[in-house]
Image (cartoon, rainbow, N blue to C red; front, side, top):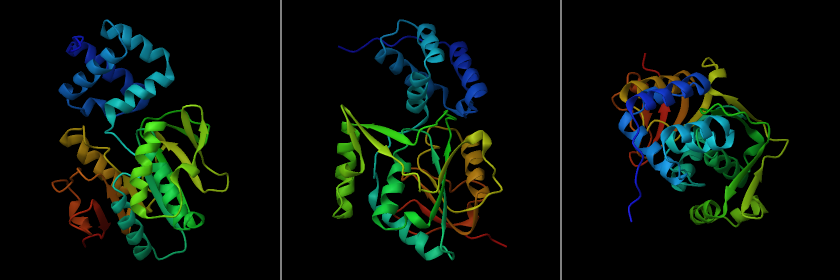
Length: 274
């Protein structure tokens, strides 16, 4: 039987948007209202709430619930080692393009940190973790003090299937600590990694690679351009931009500075046109 979806008014949508724009500096105002409304309706139904405001009150009171809701609204489904062939191509390009001994990488996160953990494990498999500085930008501006990240069993099972395509002798499950129904990844203390909120981002810093996969899929053209410009500001000559397989910036101002390295993969190299 099809579940009933609670009706949400435009006023209620705007109230939700304004609250999150003020607290999290998100681009919710640039989301499609139809897309936002539908996602909220499904979340309200899943949480067995009778109306928007009972859901909204729980959202404002419970920080963990808030993170899960925002992740569902702003992101596409991410998986550990999703598009593993692209990760291999990305790493090969990085080795070719970087002239120094250290890889400086900037990664945008907006979901369950699966891309962050994928990057760390991938670098470890290739014995390159020791020569990498990583900055993770949390676009949801969450308060994080722990360097431990939890994944459900289903997420690990999907990651294992993806990881097997690497033909690595390493078992992905060995990288996690099993705790009841959760699998925890703990970042070692000696890894050079920092987590910052997007509101504290300093665009003048430039990186050898910017990884930002699927961040823009739910946003309108204006937000696409703004986000794309942020990427460009973080790049220098020969930097690599690694985006989602279904993202496209071909129409954006500044795309002339990027050269697609493989027509089948979402990887670009930065080369400023004089």
